[in-house]
Length: 177
Image (cartoon, rainbow, N blue to C red; front, side):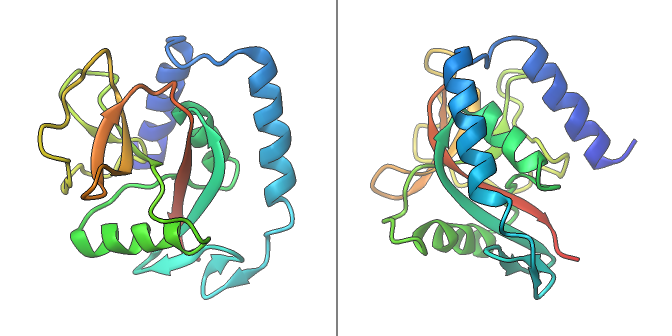
């Protein structure tokens, strides 16, 4: 079973658990905004769709629409992507710059880390190894069931574990073609 299959199975389990359920009206608003904002970005440049930025063999895209972690992942899947995994300091700095390019000052954003299946065991939803971390000192602390990973947290703009129901912008990643 490949990383994509593992990712889909994990994600399905998280969704079916009901822990990430959003109110129906909010879910419908999210779907309409997300679909409107992305259907026109389909042309490829440097192996990445228009509006995506390339780092090594992957393409990254910042989505400013605030959604829950699970809805951010659903959005990424629609574009053959996943919430971003980060594997080095250089890649983290690059992804931070992707979030900043739209005029934001390093906004909080979802990336694809979660410990929902097993508390304290962090995994990337795309199935790649969790081989790099950039936690804010004292994190992850799991205060009140915090199972999802946001970036650009605090003064140092590092990682934080937070409730998956919080609404944040997000960063998707996919393989370059």
